[in-house]
Length: 299
Image 1 (tube, one colour):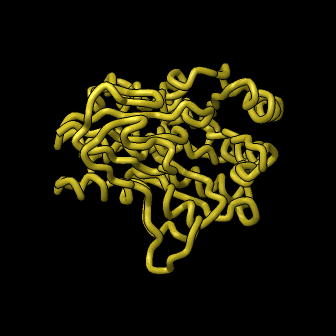
Image 2 (cartoon, rainbow, N blue to C red):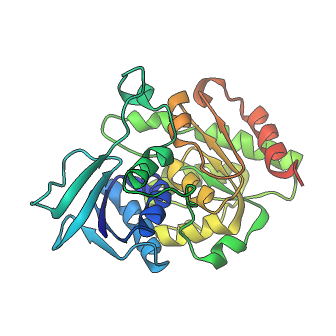
């Protein structure tokens, strides 16, 4: 069976599709079609890395008309941008978006389960019956090497015209206070952050001025994946890199602005914490104490 997965929008959504892609790979050959917008660049990097690991056969941009697929899974999110017979050809098309639960609400309140579980419904509909596969997509040597006292800070500040995603960012001052308290509790702890020029100017440099060096900024996303892998744990509000850390099964503490986002988007790994409504309720020193106990309190 030849399967096409239609996938778009960001690093986190791409990483969370890996279990489904792994499951579909047991049923046939999997190709991926990826968007070309600004938010899709990180997803493309995830899929290209996954392709090098043998999880994906081919990665297409915009169209995949070279062959006819047995099944096309238009996975989360799918808004009709890719149409059968125009952008791809498939005998059967599955709309893989999550459906509202019993409440029949829309938006955040419709998310009653994790996105990985929503996506796995597609694989199970095609006959996959085993347990949900792991989310790992990076090379094994990256998964094995880590520095237990090095923390990756997910500072990413997603910018959009409506400024909606500003609600995700914890604030530079809070990060400064958090880092200082972590160092009081564990003097050997060190922090690492990566990002593009805008991240550098808006988050990394201002925080570094207050707390000292956090390493040289890394602009290329593939190199940033390796930086996450070097770290022994993750802390922050950037859910894209949060899911990269979770795919490596690092202890992952994700800052979530909304309860339903935590339901749908929590770290998919063995050791995780989310702090809901952090913008109003999360005191940085208390969060630092909880984080240090979470990462180093369990030997």
